[in-house]
Length: 242
Image 1 (cartoon, one colour):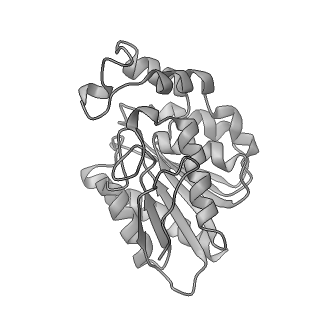
Image 2 (cartoon, helix red, strand yellow):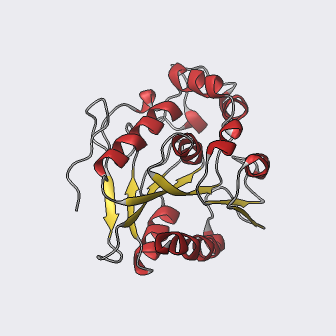
């Protein structure tokens, strides 16, 4: 469907396209969180459901993640914001929206706050307070020597920690986003607190909606995948029809 997508560094961005309505020029890009990739089960399920509802969808792995080019140790929010810009370059001619999970949610906020090509935005358990997250989750890990959540495939880099500290929080970008925005967050999220979504939602402009899911964890696992999809798909389809 698409020619190979590369970022500004010439690194390949791996993607999987899900065809919805072939007559529609709307497409939604799905981005993952830190240590994730485009093949997270709930992202696959969501993309399949979008396509079944007639919405074209493209799951991507940011550079350094999954089967994309680049090094994991170079992966930062700022680099992924640029990656998303390269994806949008490749999607010229499409009416494009973005769904971002966790750190991918922060990526979406930063991109949408400065890029009018994004016509709607969905944040799934979106990370907002980046420095607090990095300090909380990785503050006792030595960059260059330790790993994220003890996963040897995910070494913690100084570049990552520095970028998180430089950004501090994406909350102040909320007022710059002028497109429809849906935020979805689980009460039992022990990775990104639901307060992150509440904080940025309070600063966001209309039209906006915050959907809080009782019992759901960070990745909408088990019984919570279906209700997350049931919320997101009709909302996105309404934007696609707009």
